[in-house]
Length: 289
Image (cartoon, rainbow, N blue to C red; front, side):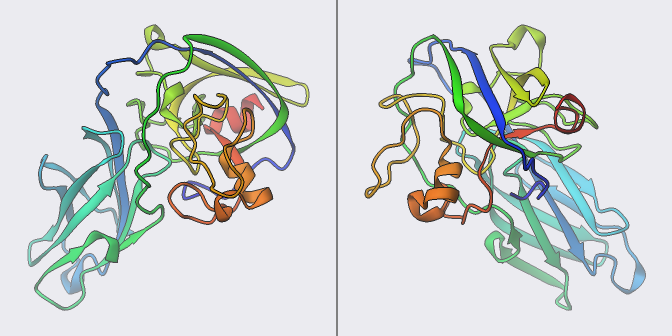
């Protein structure tokens, strides 16, 4: 996880209550992505201001005193993400970063580290300076499950803390301090926005004696096509050729971490380092549970 290494060590009982609207023939809505990073040697000898811009849409931000920057809420035309070119500039120097894949949501935000170096001008492929999640696999989108169902999951689900204050979630919500929402690893359970009128999907979580109901506003952790609350054939998760399809109720990340499903990797080919099947915003993680 790029957002944080903090996680609950205790087991969590997970209850999903989802109301699904039919997606047959629907056009994917616009979603949002983020780019964060650090510019090394940003000011040179003259301590000059540095600006980072997304060239095709003209969105820009200034680098802070530590070299950090965040471009939040970039509009994306596809749920698989969009590719952008960045221009990093200061009065005496500029650099181009090309073909940067930006995926929906805060959890899988693109993270970069770039050093101006000694050359007056430079052009660099994004993968040469990218850190964090890699390019996702292209998985087919299957037919939609029934419009309404309820699942009481007897298998404990593990959660990580999302953090990422100031980033924009996959449905356009800007994350605030001590926020209250969750992320699930499939957009099939994502609310269209953070408006109360768009509250279609909620989860009810119980940990020890505490119970809370929260909206789903982001996609993650680890995977983005793992609707683990669905059954085959509706479950979208990739199928391991050795282990076969996964049943309902256990996330791909949990299967990969504990049993080596898909070679112990997520859908992007990253080694799964914890078994989280849900991410919690800070208020949900620290206060609610």
